[in-house]
Every structure is written in structure tokens, then in C-alpha cells.
Image (cartoon, rainbow, N blue to C red; front, top):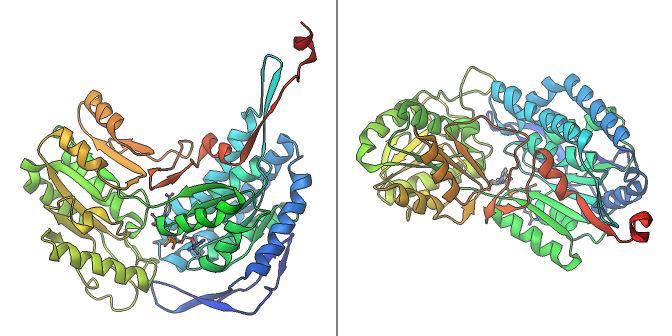
Length: 479
Ligand code: NAD
């Protein structure tokens, strides 16, 4: 049982302004795994003021000092790696292998990329007599979700520290353990007081207070489109920069000459990873309609190869994060059946023998049309929708026929054709033929999937202001 009731403000663990707590549930057991405090506007104000005070000094640190700081964070993270992975499994149910190899690994990966980028990043540029400088934007507010909890924290905090910003983090109240351990790591690494602050709590209270606080210069939000819109509205009166990483309903176009075993099987596996709780999951699989039967057979086998069970056991899939999500997913699976899609495997209810824990059957629907709810709404569960197309042009049109634009996937034998299709897709990241993730590649959405980009060097831009200094070079001016 974890007692995580303190907040971290101005370099110290402190009590919240008011006593209000929330139990954190382990989704594999439905038992209480720990308790956090639910913060208030007063806690946010205290944390933001600490960050503002620290900004005066931290913004003036040298590149070398910040590289040194990131190096110390990486070293401390390595010491706590196992703790981090365990906390993630406990708070959101990721199987131990996934928590280690992907979830916890990406947390450290983003700090490593921020450090690598910082080594050569160009903060100044001279054009004639004008110097253009990139300066840290100031105090940042970070609001993060539960699905890849430390990945989403690290991809904001890493580049924010690298650019000389100070910050306040509010992790998801559903999966707050990893954020607490993250904070302990930063403390152990000697992050100066006030540079990084942690306040736990819910969205409408702490999230809203952060979004609207006049001393916050930018807010970076990852979560649902619904909450992202709230954040932008709350941020508008103080004209702060708003960065949003929101939902997705990504198309996965499989061309006729693709390696179907690899593309269909890999597509299904990508959705099932993390129990379907990834914003960039390729949930709408578009396949040549004439080959639907073949696709169904491969997809069925791939889904059924996903064993579901105790995340500390040897299973491919753990539970989904909460009862709320379980109910939402069940409702959408039922909608798929009611609206006439073909249920290939899985379906409503719990997998056999799993009476406790929020487990969902790996589910595949075929003969889905793009007007069905399961083709339109983000399910955020292990559910694949397979749609048939007649022409590649139609596949592209249907692929783009969504309010989202986070990711897209294309597979095919002819690289020229694959690239041509990719160029027509309105999405922030297009993956060709099952390419591996790239932490240096910009990550973010078109349309209602968000604004701005995270990861690698592109992330730095979110945390920098641009200043043009005219008449900077007296020598050139005199000529
Ligand atoms: P959520 O929007 O409910 O919560 C995300 C965070 O926002 C939490 O910390 C929550 O407390 C806070 N929040 C909620 N309401 C708020 C408000 N009114 N003001 C300020 N903060 C508020 O989302 P979730 O259920 O935790 O996460 C799932 C969603 O996140 C999915 O839609 C998924 O696609 C999206 N997501 C997107 C990305 C991306 O990079 N695009 C990554 C991961 C998750």
C-alpha cells in the first residue's frame, strides 16, 4: 500500500493545503494499491510561485549545466528502473514485460534524447545585423494521462529542463505512482528547488487551476480531446501557449501487394499492445475488400494468440485501466454488434476464468463501415475494426475521414506506392511497413488530435520563445 499523499513543491515534500485523498486501484486485482492527495487551487498557486521564483536562476544556466543535470537524472532513473516498471504495472495494469521494455524504457529514453539534442541545439542565429535567440518560455504546466504514464511525463519534462524552463506537473489521478517515483528521481538527481514541482489531483480542480493560472506561460496537455478543449478554453484569457496531444483513430492501410501475414498480424498486435490503450493505435484496418476472408483468418489467429491475464504473469495483455474504461469498452463492443459489424473474435464480457480485474477479450470486428460508431469513436481498448475498400483512392478517403489525425500506417510491397499513399494521409506520423518507433521523430496530431509536436528536437520548440534583437551586430551595421 503506497502512501503518496505529499506534494513536491520548492524542492521539498509538503502536505497539501487541504486533506482530501483518493484511493488508487490496481486494475488487475481491483484492490486499493495506494492513496494520493487531491490538490486544490491553493496548492497549484504555491507550486507555480515556486516555479516562477526558480525560473530567474534556472533560465540562466548554461548548456553544460543542464546536460550535467540530465545526466544525473538518467543515472538516478537507472537505479530506480525496476521500481518504475513495477509502479506502472500496479497503477495501470501493463504486463511486467511491457512496463519494463517499453513504458519505463521510454521514460528514460526521452531524457536521453533531450540530452542528445541539447548538446548541439542552436539557440542563436545571426541574420545580417539581427540576432535571433531562442529563450525558455518560462513556467510550464504539464497535465498527463494514465496510458503511457511516465513516457508522457518524460517527453515533456526532459526537453523543458533542457531548454531552461521550470514546471509544475499534474499526472493522471488514476495512475499517479510513476509520477511520484519520477519526482523522487528528480529530487535525488539534485534538480534545483522550484524547477520541478508535483501537485496531484483531478482535472476540473488542479488541471483547471494550472491551465488558467496567470503565472503559467505554457500548458502542455496530453489526454482526451474533450479535456484538451477545456484546457485551451481555460488558458485563453491569459493568452498562454497551449500544446495538446489528444485522441486518435488511426487508419492502417494495407495494400494488395503487402505481406498480409506481417501487415495484418502486426496491425492486430499493435492494437492489442497495452490493451489497446495507445493514442496512436492502428485501430481502423483498411484492406482490399476482395481479400476480406483471408484477412479475417489472419486477424483472428493474431488476436487469439494474445493471452490475457495477471500482468505479473507471462501474458501478452493485462487488464484495462479502470472499471470506467471497462464499461466504456463493453458499451462500444456491443454497439459494433448492434450496428451490424461481423464479430470475428472476442466480444462482450470478461475472458474466461478472469472474474476479478478489468480484463477485456482481444476483439476483432470485420465488415465495418466508416459510419459505424466503432469506426469513428476512440475505443481505447483491445478492439480492431476491419474495413474493406475497392480502390486505393477510396482507402485514402476513408483513412482521412475522421476528426482525428494523430497517426496513420501503410503497408505494401511497392515502396513508391506506399510513399504516395503516405503523402495523402493527414496525420502527424505515418508509419510505413511496420517501422519501429523513433524517439527522435516528432510526435503529434493534425486536426482534433492536437497542436504542436513532442519528442526529439521538435519538442524543444514548444518550450522556447523567439526574440529578435535588431542592431545586434554593430560591425555589420556600420558597414
Ligand atoms: P483525460 O483527458 O480524462 O485525462 C488526461 C489528464 O487530463 C488527466 O491528468 C486528467 O486529470 C486531466 N483532466 C481531465 N479533465 C481536465 C480538465 N477539464 N482540465 C484540465 N485537466 C483535465 O484522458 P485519459 O483518460 O487520462 O487519457 C486517455 C486519452 O488521452 C485518450 O483520448 C488518448 O487518445 C489520449 N492520449 C493522447 C496521446 C497523444 O500523444 N496524442 C497520448 C496518450 C493519450
